[in-house]
Length: 348
Image 1 (cartoon, rainbow, N blue to C red):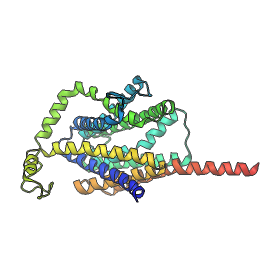
Image 2 (cartoon, rainbow, N blue to C red):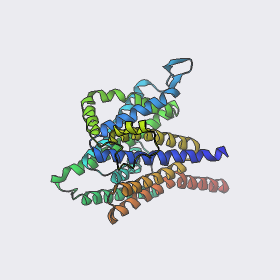
Image 3 (cartoon, helix red, strand yellow):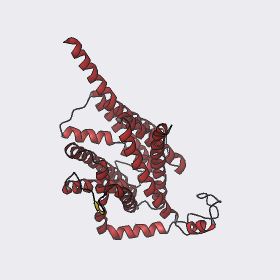
Image 4 (cartoon, rainbow, N blue to C red):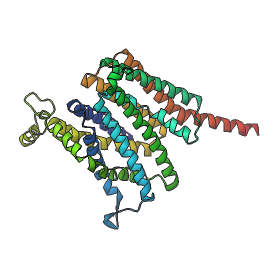
């Protein structure tokens, strides 16, 4: 009975954590689109603190476990990780909507293929076809979002939206390269994913120091948001104790959502890592694609984002081709290899 509840708990972490994270993210962005740096810092601090106990040396509570990976390699990984997260959250400052942000971040299969090709990997025709369809879906969705906001992706006078797309594309390319780098680390030093999670966040924190003035300005902007609890508020149940209600009545809504965003980011990451450890790669791919689709639908429904026919076609192309790529990568190729091996044995 308990074993059957474990997968349910993991999926709850992923869907509850990741989808709530998108909700909190959009609530913050609606108040202050330029708060990407502060959002990133909040997530990094909380994840780092949550993973810290697993990295402490049992024989000395104030010392960290010895890392199997050389420290300079963690520094390189942390630098890329910091840049990827900064770019992803910075894109909101260019009027990129959350639904299109979700779609463009699903572009990882194409960038991963490009990075893999540069390192000598080869891909099947179905993988190439699925990535081509995914690319078409991303372009259609971006064009639909630009048109819906009265912008033109080809007009030099409307460069802000195009700059946002360029920022997200750069983030995806760097993320793909980081994935290849981390895979090489695991191949040489072992799959120390918890250490990677810890050091990628810990070593990124000093990189925020030169940006403290911007962080202060972003926090002050969030502090000016309306209070979480108002006479017409629907954010909290009426049964809460009065001291709690008074405290939250003094808490700006965007600041509260900043905390929610950090907590749900931790839940989301934990769920994905647990799922990866307990199930097959194809299950992870399917669950994550469904999760992105659910987040996309929630963003359209809860925040009134526009979804015309063109956007719907782009979304179907992206999520459908992403699922096709995942199936081909984790199931299709393996089945053909196994079949070829069986036929070779029979021919002997």
